[in-house]
Image 1 (cartoon, rainbow, N blue to C red):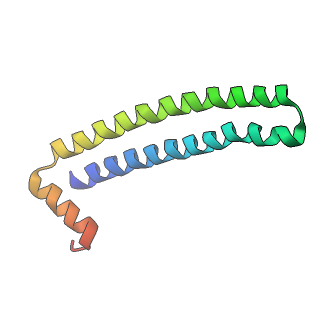
Image 2: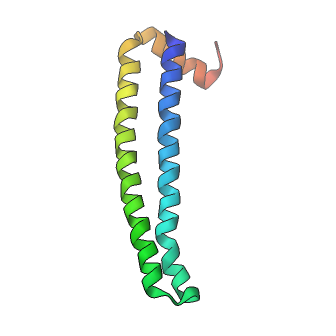
Image 3: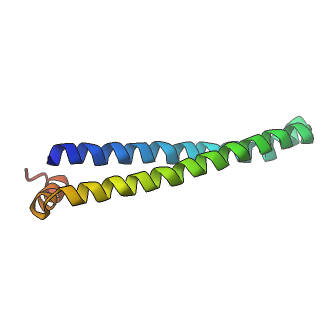
Length: 99
């Protein structure tokens, strides 16, 4: 039971990490047209790229919020299904490698 709960928590953490990384990439894409306009001199084209990047960023942000909710629910489930002794043992194994 401890192993499956640990795996479940790690998978949830990994999924959340991936969504946050996607959000960071999106922030870079939102920033790029404001810099590129000086080289391209195509303000309307760069504005279009900016608008598209903002829309994608909004979707990614919504996905991250959903993933945080899922992550929180997964952690609550793990905490509720593990006994206190198992939870404490898992913590000590993780931090001190005493298992």
